[in-house]
Figure 1 (tube, helix red, strand yellow):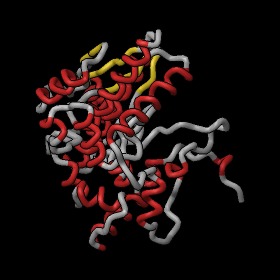
Figure 2: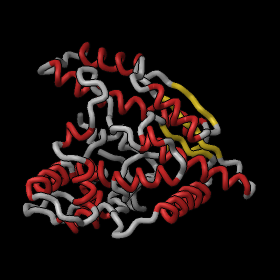
Figure 3: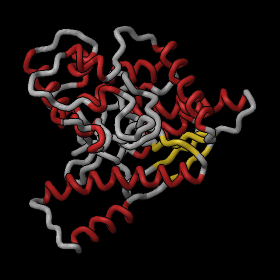
Figure 4: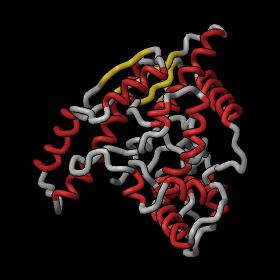
Length: 304
C-alpha cells in the first residue's frame, strides 16, 4: 500500500517546511542511524507520564492559539488512533474546566463492513469522545474509482487496482475528517509517529494529511507505553497493527509490508544495535520515501 506521504505545516513563506526532517531528500550517500532518529524527533529518553502531559499541553496550546474550537480524528480501532484520541479528549476536557468550549470529535470511517469493528467500538468506549460520527466511505471511494476507469484508465493488474483503490480510501477518509473539522471550526489530528514515518507508511494526502501530530517522534513501543499509561485496554495496546486498505489482503499486518518488525524499527530509531540487513532496509525505505515527508516543493526554494 502506498500508505507512504504527508501534509505538514508551512512556514510564513509557504514554500519550506517548519520541521526540518520532512524536507530531507536523498543525497547520494547512506543516511546514518543517528541522523534519521534526530530528523524524526526521537528523544533519547522516554517517560510515559511526562509525555502524556507534554502532548496534551501541545494540543491545548495549539488549539487555543489557533482560535478554533475542536479537534477531529478518525478512529479505526488501532492503537495509534486510540492513543491520539484519548490524548485529544483529555486535552479538551481540561480546557473546558478553564472555561473553554473546546470539543473532541471522533469519526468512524469504515469502507462498508469493517472486519475489526469491535475494536473500533472498544476504542471509542476507552476514549469517551464528546461527539461521534460514522461515515461510510464505500460509495465515495467506489464512485471515484469508477469515474477514473470511465475516463480511460485501466490498472495493469488486479493487485495494482487494489493498491490504488486503497489509497483512494485513505484520501476519502481525510476528506470526511476535514469536512467535519470545517463544520465544527476545528483542526484535524493525524496519527503519524516515527516508526511509520521512517518507513513512509502512510498515504500521501490521505492519513498523512493533518494539522497536528500528537504522536510525532514516538516509536511504536513508546506509543504502546503511552497508551497503557492512559488506561487503554490491553487488547488494543497489544493489537497487531494493520492499515486494512487492501481488499485482496484484508487486515494485512504492517510488518508484512515492511519486511522488518516494529521491534527492529524501534531499536533502530532509539539508537540500539540492529543487524546490518535490517538497518539497510530501514535506511532504504527512509530515503526512498523522502518525498512523502515533504511539502510540495516550490521552485522559489531552489536556487541555482
